[in-house]
Length: 117
Image (cartoon, rainbow, N blue to C red):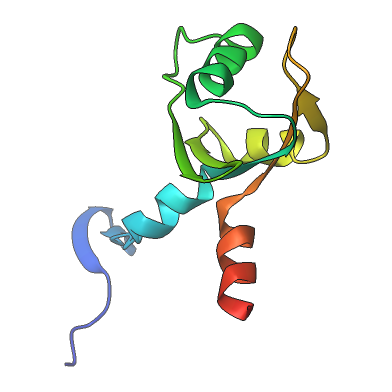
């Protein structure tokens, strides 16, 4: 128990050294940070319609857009960054040529609200 500090790596100069500190990230939390809840607030949308809209808006060159249906008018989708989810969270979005609107919110806020119900 006396040696629970960071792992010693090397000494290059007297009185100077560096240590390796392992990061223990919880993979579940890391995944949840980039997952968004999509709520259809008007009309009806399918998984393909949502995926195609993000391919059209953002591109699919560097990211594969995959939506999953949770329930009626509720979907989840992973985003490349948390910032993108927070940016889209400010708007009600529509799909070109379809009379439907949806909102995006971080998955963690949905899970927090669901746990409080």
